[in-house]
Length: 261
Image (cartoon, rainbow, N blue to C red):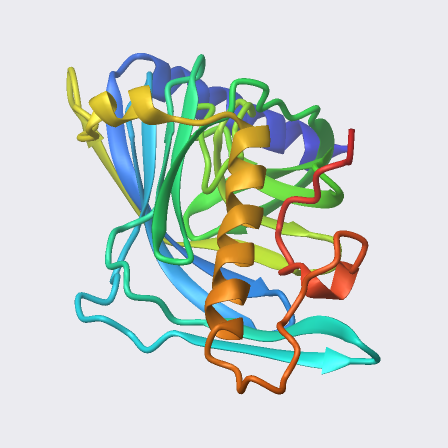
């Protein structure tokens, strides 16, 4: 009981201190993906009290070899590996509380997407822990097919976080799903007290943004085009590759699981 009261007092005092100042900062995160193959990426979140930009770091500036391995199993096409790429642009996610846009690279194509229905129904817990020098509180949610746990700090009272996560009363420093398909953790946090910290992003690109259904259709179209390209290189006596709509193993695994409508 005494520990809970002390935690509440610490959080309250932190909120009072930061509420008196206009501040901004940046956080470097490490993201671990485990979609059949474990990969790691580094991202930087720049934020102020009104908006944030989560941008990929250390993007390879030279063209990488594209490796796509397809095989047939019992007459069905299956994707074994999808690695590499020739596009050297940084993926990013922009959030100003009211709008959410992001650019993802898929099959070397830059896909700009608007996600107006991005909403998290967070359930707060009294459980706390420290991440670096910040006291964090636990929150859980279900989002697009996965159950997530997030740790956010009211000591930095902005409703932002890594990737698409947002909507808590403090900056999210760690988040992961139940199956650890996605794990994100802050590696460094830098805060600056300023009147106005500008977020640098080319908002004119948002005009070309597609909807989520259009985005999913485009990804499927790019997969089909790649299969056709590979089929054209097969010997004449080998039947062309074909991806059936009901073949779940043919589709690349993704973080977000969208329900069919």
